[in-house]
Amino acid sequence: MTIAALYRYPVKSMLGESLARATFDERGVLGDRAYAVLDVETGIVASAKVPKRWARLLEFSAAFAGEPVAGEAAPPVVITFPDGSTRRSDDADIDQALSDVLGREVKLITTPPDGVAFEELWVDIDGLERAELGPEHIIEATTKRQEDTGEAISHFDVAAFAPPGRFYDLAALHVVTESTLARLRELAPESEFDVRRYRPNVVLADTPPGFVENDWPGQEMTLGDDVRVAYTFQTMRCVMTTMAQGDLPEDRNTLRTVAKNNRIQIDKPEVAGKWACAGVYADVAAGGEVAVGDAHA
Image (cartoon, rainbow, N blue to C red):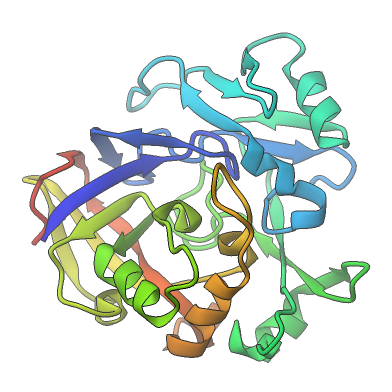
């Protein structure tokens, strides 16, 4: 197996950076999800997983102005706005500029407040029961409000299974294989299963065919010469994978295809149940540097 691509996302839910080389520490890819947009009214971290409120986040992209350094504060990021203009995170008016575009009062932050949460929409898709995305008991227990469509919106703690300090949804590292994307394309050739929909940190090539990551939780593997990752549980997929970004159109069939063909029982107590999955989460057991083209074993 080889590393086909590396990504980091400096600002949660904005488009990120493709990297030739990345540094891994105990919290994942250095600089990943270092920033987030905070909704001032609710105190909730903005996430495109609630499309009606935050879909425009996917029209922004962010890249670091300088390379992050382990043990130091994250450097400023350059944010490209939907109109193509750019601003830096350390501009005095950055919060107002973001608020003007997003239509809500927001702040760009780098330190997760205690108990901070994000929200996620349980999307209704024709031909798909809500329970085919995730276990009904989890949905019922976490639902805090509803969209005006009647769709449930859940409330989750940020970085529930990751070391604190960054704005992950769940885990520190997300890995997907080209084999999984190829299998989804075979199942639904009319849809575009572009890797950008899945926002991984690591894309692996030269793996066996099919949803190969399903069998990896509980295993440790090496990236390059030094980095060791411990696979934890399969990646549960959501409405964000269906949304328009860049030149990719909105396509709810991409999520329907995962739900119909790869529902996996996850036994981790906090999320126990059967989920629509593609990819796998991991912890970093030993840090270091890796590059595209390095081996994975």
